Length: 562
Image 1 (cartoon, rainbow, N blue to C red):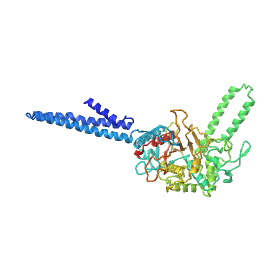
Image 2: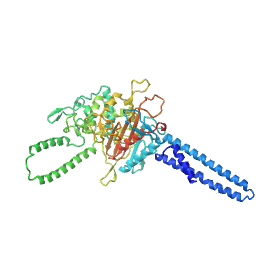
Image 3: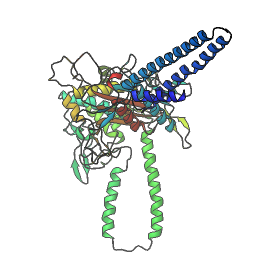
Image 4: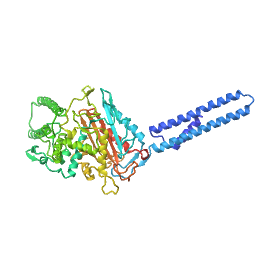
């Protein structure tokens, strides 16, 4: 019997293909257990018949025939069961097994063999990835949303439901309120990408010139000098972090000046001998540590500001009189304060208050659960914010007022709204006005989004070997595979954020072809994957890497699974 079972299993394996994934292994086990359960009753059936024969002496031949008939019927039933299970596993293998397909020629994607997976498999893997990053950081809560081609891929919504609630953990630890799809959290620097949409819209309307000096729009901004020469700052430089405006570190301008003076002094005294060098080295070390502590104190003081600013122009007082860190247009220096200056430019160009402009944008885009982070306003489903203390324990984040940096880091939102925003950008990027089908125009023009998503070669970033900054967005573009069977670069656009009690990421992975069915033509945008993750823990590491893995994972979901 065991030999027969082995042959049956071998036959099923040959019919259904090699068992490659966890899901198929479980199907294989199910098949084996099903066969075993059907075979196990054969001896019992035979024994019961044999006992019946012994109790009915004189009917030997007839009973032998009946027993043989029963055994044959049982074996036939087993065969039917085996055939049914083999057919079932074959269907599942063809529908959801790892079918190796060649990627179509597409300049926006890597040219390599892709292993396709089912939607169910993608969800299970994504759940594990999110749970891992939550556990590794000890984050109280985590919300996730994913879309494929902007269409329904799960239930009755536009987003994949992760863990049934799009979320893990708690929005409020003390009151045991769980995270869910509409949990509102701090999105930090993703605010820059949203603000960039307003800047782009004003530029399209001819209300804002990106290359005019900011003093044209904000006369209260002081004239700037760098190394004794007058310099101008433009909005185009600001949106790419090339204006030389400092971040939270106040010493950047002074530091560069000191480095230049020290280099000059070192060259002049290169041949001199200093007998006090050991003591001076010790003193310099102490002074250096004190300066580092002082700089960190300054940075934290601005990061944790509690002061309420009545408007964006008064918020400029934080940094407007500080020295520039570099000549505008020459060096990349990431800055949130620079976006506060952008918000002042936007106010002047639109002739409206910045909060009004942003609320109108949220309404136009359908981002119903996105707001400026105003502490006095009642906002439903707002999460509590958390940090870790020096001992690594979760504590409530201190009170902060983000009115000093609404444009660059002061917006709160949900993962659903962020994915919706990502699909709007992707639709605008891929919309072709020359198409004959009656599709509505994108919120922004395609050439405008292409401008925002074009990497500036002066903005080489350290977060990815192929990463650059565009205009309000981080950009990774494929540069080709340098070595065979080595790293291949995927084109995507993103932004991350880290705030007091919040960490976030938004990733847009575009592609040309669609994988979902729809009533319109195959050219209907958006085409691609959008992923958003938000945590209510400050400095929650690994979200960006996790979001990219999830985006690539769902990019390989097979057509029939959607």
